[in-house]
Amino acid sequence: MFTLDDLLTATQGRVISKGKEIFREASIDTRTIDKEDIFFALRGSKRDGHEFVDEALNKAAGAVVSKVEGIEYKDKTVVLVDDTLKSLQSLAKYLRRNFKGKVIAVIGSNGKTTTKELIASFLSKKYRTLKTEGNFNNNIGVPLCISKIEKNTEIMVLELGTNKPGDIRELCEIVYPDYALITNIGYEHIEGFGSIEGVREGELEILPYVRTVFVNGDDDFLMEGLKRYSGKIVTFGLSKKCDFRAENINFYNEHVEFDFCGEIFSFPVKSHLPGIHNIYNLTGAITVATFLGISKGVIQEVSESFSPIKMRGEIIKIDGVEIFFDAYNANPSSMKVALQELVRRKKDRKAVAVLGDMMELGSFTDLAHEEIGKWIREMEIDLFIGVGKFIRNALRYANGYVFDDPKEATEFLREKLKGNEVVLIKGSRTMQLEKILEILKEGRQ
Image (cartoon, rainbow, N blue to C red; front, side, top):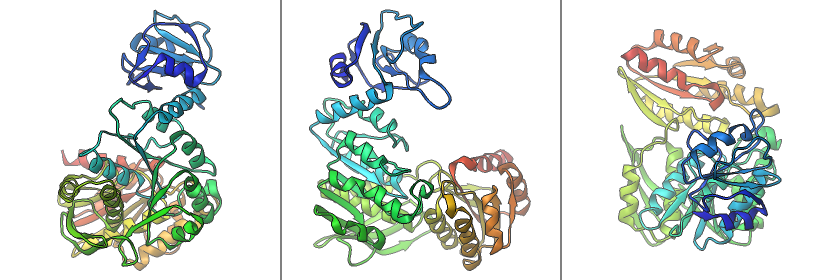
């Protein structure tokens, strides 16, 4: 919670109307706002939050605004500021400056959300932990999370996202992390960076702010970029060169088992997260947990009970068909590992890849989708179905069928399914490939 005095000190705002003086958290959404929250009227590209101030004052304790015309104060707290977004960020920065606990930032091209959720799950068994919700990892979502700090909060686990140079630096100026975990460097948001080197530089903007980084030691390109870092580097991965490693990996139908190994210890871990990429996510998260004093027993318990996050590597079975559903986002790196996991799960079944466009690749768009076609051919995928316009480039190297929308693709997929297939559904969020899953589920009822 924070007080009106905290808000005024942080934002230099002016009180127009005074009501409640203690707030549970900041909010920008009147659909989910609570009576103890304070509403920040942000201006978006499509809507202006000031249109909803009246509704917010009916539901919540107050509002922070940059204009007061037409507002009925209703005995609620109203604070006038020059810029509501900057004020939200200033509040978060103020609360972070007064926070005595530790802050862990999770960054990288792939696996951030799963790794963040794993770290928070481990740490919450020992510490009062606050985490960013979902993938709300930008200059709005992160400040909103920080506004939820309570007096007994001990650790914050914050996912920080970037799609252009300066994003990580801007967020670090708010959160000032003590530690950072870097999952990997790949072709994510390359449209905003121009090159893979630009992606790396964007992620490594975090280095001046942290004293310890946990990094994927198997990512040679990432490790090359860390040569200038003078702080403590702790590596995780699958190879012997890493400080903490997953060894003796065994995949089974419904789970994976491996040994988590350090310099002087080793213990078994069991998980239901699919794919080799999730072993990296797990190993990174366990490394942080171990570093911060989480016991072996807790790590084993949490690892085994942790379920895939919605739309990120879910395994769903419909009428004998196993669906590997990973359609929250996609870039070339994550697409390749998803196809590899599809092939690994194939066994004596047919492998079907239903793939949507990958977005924000800029000048790399055509080439990246052509690469998918090469992977499909090399991995001997039995059936390829594309959704979108860019994925058509894959047809230059692989046989398949491409449709304009998910509904058409689903109708074709239904005709081809015999009940003994494993199906990967993956693409960028804007492609709305979850509609395919919804239609398949409806057909079962």
